[in-house]
Every structure is written in C-alpha cells, then in structure tokens.
Image (cartoon, rainbow over the protein chains, first blue to last red):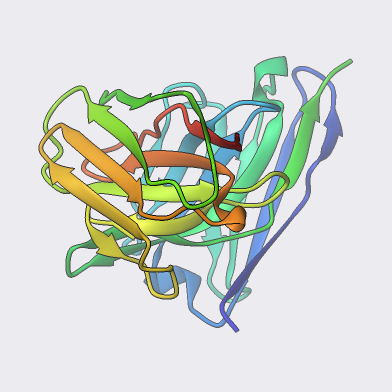
Length: 120
Length: 107
C-alpha cells in the first residue's frame, strides 16, 4: 500500500527547533518529488518546501533560511528540519508526494499530518 | 509569486444541486491547476489535475475546466459526502500556491 506517515510534531518554544519525519511505503522517496505543506489552525493550505528527485530544493519565503528539507534514501524517509521557530509556524504539517510528468503535476499522496505548536 | 483567488469563500447548497467554484490565477498558468477536497481533521484529497483530468477513483460528478487564468470546479449533483472545503492549487512554478479555500455547507 502506498502510504506516508509523519511524526515528530509537538510543542516547542519560540526560537526552538524540531525535526519532522515522513516515512514512505509502497514507493521510493528518492525517485519522486516530495513536499511539505502546512495548515495553520482554521486556515488554508500553505506550500512549504519541495525536494526534487535530483536533489534540488525550494522553499516558501516564509521559511527560507530557517527550514531544511532532506531525505534519507536508506530509510525511504523525508525530513523537515525546522529552526528558529515562530508562533506563526504553528500548524499541521503534511508531507505529500508530488507526481510529475505526462501532464500530471499534483500532490497525489498525503500523510495524515503532524501538529507543531510554537508557544511559550 | 502567483496568487490564487477562489470564489466564493463559502457556499450553501442542497443535496442534488449543481455547484460551481471558481479559481483565478494572478498570471497565466496554462493548465497547471489542481483541485483538492479536504474534510475536517483529514488530509486533502486530489480530485482534479491538469485543470480537467479526473483523478483515479474520484466520482464522475466532479469535473474541472479552464486554462490560462480562469478555472472552475463543478459538482454536477451534490451528495452528502461532498460537503467539505475545496482548494485550487497551481503547479506551474514555485511557490506552488493554493487558493484560500471554498467551504461547501449543507443548506
């Protein structure tokens, strides 16, 4: 079964750090584009970051320089290292597979989400 | 950055109604437009990709159209399970922005 399972969320103080993990099954993370998308409480979806199969990475301006997306091919796992966290980073964080090619460019597989709360 | 604007922000409708949600991009995105459905406490679910292609497993009452800057999602006959929030998303260029969402409620 194709599946993504996030972990690592929790409560952290402003200025703190957290690393989110997203374990994939049923497909290979390194062969796909993978992204993080977040949703603040009661708000809409916000794209955060992408890592392409070739290794290139891109970030939303709101997290540039503070967040780092990466993957561990041996563990078939995607990560999001979040540093210098702010209250406005409070959100449910979803990992998602970005399927691309043949006219198809969309997030077709999503994890269940992990909650990050930044508060003192 | 490309801004995505959905209308309306909320919509009340009845089972069996035909509803249309609109999404406008701040610049041309060709057909790089996707639609997602999200229910409370759940992850989004892909409905339509490339503006008009139905994702596998999605009921045929959902359809999408448009190109360039103006797009629509249509539900031909609302079912009880369709009451949810719908988001458009452009996949033309990073940042891959989403619309603000349209909440579809039962009348």
